[in-house]
Amino acid sequence: MSNHIPEITLNDGLTLPVVGLGTYLLKGSAGVQSILSAINMGYRLIDSAYNYENEGTVGEAIRRASIPREQLRITSKLPGRYQTYDKAVTTIQESLYRANLEYFDLYLIHWPLPRQDTYVEAWQALIDAKKWGLIRSIGVCNFLPEHIERLKKETGVLPSVNQIELHPFFNQAEQRKWHEENGITTQSWSPLARANQLLQNETIGQIAKRHKKSISQVILRWHYQLGAISIPKSASAVRQLENISIFDFSLDETEMKLIYTLTRPDGRINNQNPAIYEEF
View 1: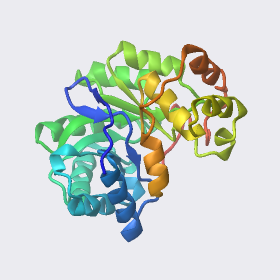
View 2: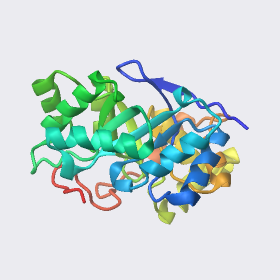
View 3: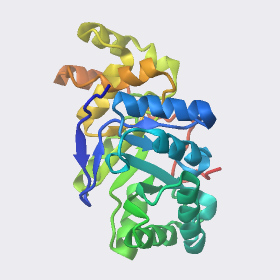
View 4: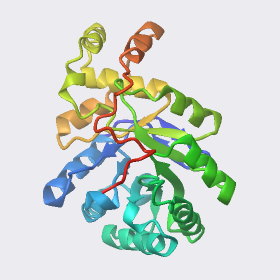
């Protein structure tokens, strides 16, 4: 079984599907089966991180999959405790060993940690790892424009992707506009907000009823029409299929605006403000 997912071309030429699989908490043999299910369903973008402690699980699923490695896009992320240059280089290598992969398609700095003030040297490590063939495309997570501007000023290299918290309760309008103006692709983590409250929202529920779709499908379609790549996590084959069955309908301008109005100043799930947040 295969489902075609449209792709976006990044500023360095790499293509990524517009919907991927988040793998947070997918571990061990059950995690392998969930990731295999997604790949068989048509997913080609698999998002992981050093801090998820499941790079080995992702690698094992890739090994067992019938899809050629070059058709997949595998992401991992550098944790804050290894942001110095030497530690970053070693961590990238260690992650590849864990996953039993020769390269990552996309590798991101997980958080800027401005108080620590080492994200620029970590970024230089990613730049060099890309030159060495360990990474195909480099990006960041949770970086504010000021952090990215500093990367450009001090290294001359902009990220291809910034993965940020993005969902209808926190639509990141200014950040997304800045990304667009600077040629950076937006990825959405927790696109469904990890919250039953959003999945029970009456406004989105009415739109879903109109289209004969689930609330999750409407939200993921909203991300797609914003131009963002979403990475919903699901261990369920039924939900995995549902999450990529969003390309046979579209939201009109009124519906997009209605969802847009749901954003809140305090809409972050866990109040993780990148200006001050210290990653675990």
